[in-house]
Image 1 (tube, rainbow, N blue to C red):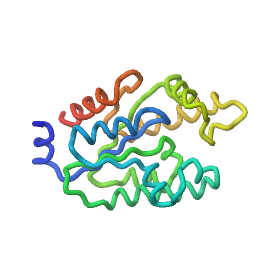
Image 2 (cartoon, one colour):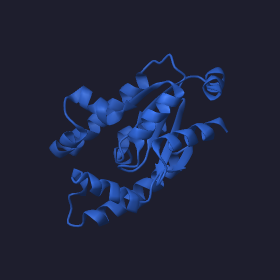
Image 3 (tube, rainbow, N blue to C red):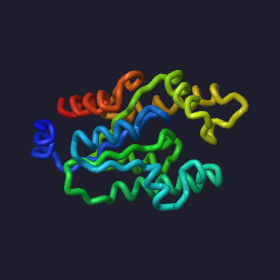
Image 4 (cartoon, one colour):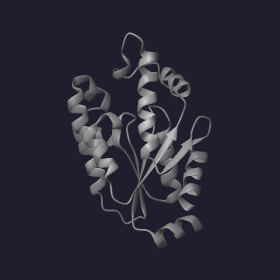
Length: 186
């Protein structure tokens, strides 16, 4: 509780954006962090579905351009939210780096903290495979190789942008959220 009061007294409302590869735990960690900080949580994929009536996957299958526009619109909406809390946690999609308009919005967001959940390519691949259905962008001749190439490129960009980096390979969402709060305190 002391941590929350500390933040509320010294900084204006901040948005904490959680980035990372697909299945790095962005949504789970975001929900835990919101519980600990007693603030609102937004998952951009859920917001996209609320705004369009279609899932991110369905939009992407229909048209990558349509999906990117919806993702940018959802991010814009999350930036316009007026909050009474000190924080608002926002989980971004794992491929937001590949959406230049949305990524520019993220890079230029005011009062924003960017948290990167770092997981290895192997860990991410295992989690993707555990779901049983490959995302559309991995439906290639060699999905594992496509994943590794995307993972490497995206993670390098996320590391450069992030204010906070967390190794999320083997920690629970609660442990990761606690580490984020500790790093924000320092």
